[in-house]
Amino acid sequence: MSKSRKSQQALAAALTTALLAFAAPSMALAQDEGGSDRSERGTRAADRASRTPERSERRSSRQSQSQKAESLYPNSSRQEPGVSASQRLFKQLNTLSEASNASDAGKGLPVADEIIANSSANAYDKSMAALLAGQLLLNEDNARAVTYLEQAIDTGGLDNNNHFQAMLIIAQLQAQEDQYDQALTSLDRYLTESGSTDPKDQALKGNLLYRLERYPDAIATLKPLVESGGEVDPQWTQILMASYAESGDSAEATRLAEQVAQATPDDKRSQVNLAVSYLQTDQNDKAIEVFERLRASGQLTEESEYRNLYALYLNSENKEREAIAVINEGLQKNILKEDYRTMSALGQANYFSDQVEPAIAAWRKAAPLADTGDTYLNLARVLHQEGRAAEAKEAAQQAIAKGLKSNADAERIISGR
Image: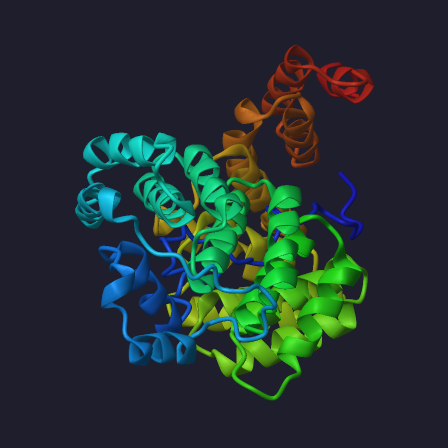
């Protein structure tokens, strides 16, 4: 076997940038794409959504002024509908509200359907019934929840806060179900009609654009947020970084990765993302440094992380012994398994560091696990070079039995040539 340096293998497992998950939203208390509560504004909207509707005659001008001051969407051109619960349906709405507060869908949904179907119900009654029905189904049956929320919006009886929060939740639910095209359409409608300027809403749009592989659009949406000078969620920077990387601007992705890693030194995900960025810009030494810091602090806990580190060493000049140390540590901690990939890499690392006997031992374990006879053939070649003819012949026979593209080398070893 030639010992000339070549690309021994690709990274053992692809390093991928950690992206935001779409959090499961709750009614009006909408969550951002990182899973945190949107703000106190959502809490107030949630209170209104689940509160027993008040009769119009009980609302004072002082209450109306207070509600106006609390408007979540002051830039919207939508006029508040100004309708309230019908007196004759007040009892049913109260029952539905109580069921909603208790998360009792079995009790609440039939009442909601009765209100929606009632010809005497006004726009507020029907919209609020559909809104609360949607709330009862959130994260239990999201498709039905969306149907109810759309009905609440289309009926037009909700105050602006609940009207637009329902729109936002539809977009979140669609994103959660990987319906990114529909989610973006819903979100664009929400942004246009609500006039929202909340950075979290723009961050959600940037995330959706990234998922749709519209990287330039994602960059255009997220860059102003990250460079705003205000409070920036590091996860927004991570999506922007990933967008740059996918669009081929690895240098900018690396700059952002360094920024995030510096701001969150104790966040393992940020450090792994930094290593990814160094890999994409062929800065393998820096990537190794990041992984070694994590290793030294005991933060390498996943099989893929150990594989990535030893693969980096195997793709570096004269770093075989370091790769061996990483593999052996992973095996000792039971993080790595004695599977084909690991034992084959261990055999390579030992062989290229002139440790023939450990290489033979590793390849003996790897060869039976391989899909083809190539590893058996490598083993046969090494044994033949070491003058161990009988063992080499046996390994060559096993190589042929397991399957080779060409049997020429194996047959030569079997014949003793």
